[in-house]
Amino acid sequence: METKTVKYINVNGKLMDLSHPQVMGILNVTPDSFYAGSRQQTEKDIINRTSQIIEEGASIIDIGAYSSRSNAEHISPEEEMRRLRTGLEIINRYHPGCVVSVDTFRADVARMCVEEYGVAIINDIAAGEMDPQMFDMIARLGVPYIIMHMQGTPQNMQMNPHYDNLLKEVFLYFSEKVQKLRDLGVKDIILDPGFGFGKTVEHNYQLMNHLEEFSLFELPLLVGISRKSMIYKLLGGTPDDALNGTTVLDTISLLKGADILRVHDVKAAVETVNQDSNLEKQDQNLLCYHYTISQFSYQNTRFDFDAAKIRLFI
Image 1 (cartoon, rainbow, N blue to C red):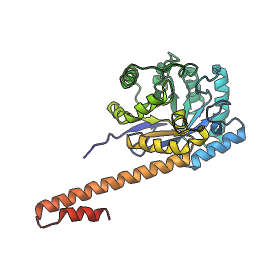
Image 2 (cartoon, helix red, strand yellow):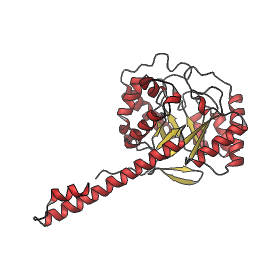
Image 3 (cartoon, rainbow, N blue to C red):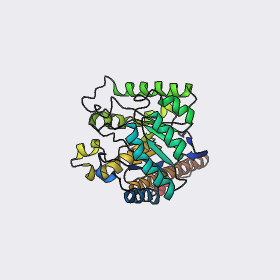
Image 4 (cartoon, rainbow, N blue to C red):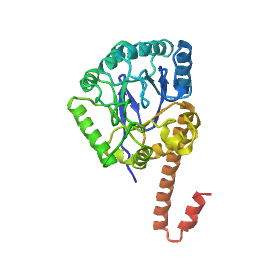
């Protein structure tokens, strides 16, 4: 029987069990994120969105103040932190104790968020490439760290993404990053393949087809494909039309080993996780039934093994 690596991350001194996949709800306090439905700027909007994320069953809120869409405007650290302060103060006021992740590539922003607001996780789209101080800061802060693969920067990543060998280059990238972090004493590392970041539609689906191979790292795997162009460019339409495609790819991701789904539509993702978990339990039960029947058949040659197998599926 296949063995599954047990994965945990230390979140604010408590272990989060990833044997049951977790859902991370997106809160964008930006005016220009690619999906208009995720943009929250007024206090009322932020309150409503954070409440929705929690009520629909997400275990993590991921707040971002720097849009990482292709050709996004570059903003200063001061402006990024100003936006984050607004959102984090509201979250702490209305939902104290909830697990918060901050989407930032800046070490000083990460420090202020953790030290001043108790943020539990840092989610870095650049994996230290856009701020050479980030790895040292993460080691100092001692929080779980999400590292994503991206070719280039948000301003140029989609101009002409090219790889001689996509999988080899992505795996080598993560191998080097993980080793550097381990050498610094970072314990909780989460991998994000970076769907849509410096990749063509074909590159994205090639990664999806080989997603299960990330298990070689024996680290938690985050997948963020919610309403992305790899869906609506294939099916037609806009991000507004991409929920069904998102649910299909989230399901495939779970079957291939994803531990965290980063999503806009929390309710749909939670339902997907629950369905997948139920199917996994049923599959385990069937394996147990088959094993029991095989043993009985071996000991009693008059037992009709094939008929018993058929009855299990009726």
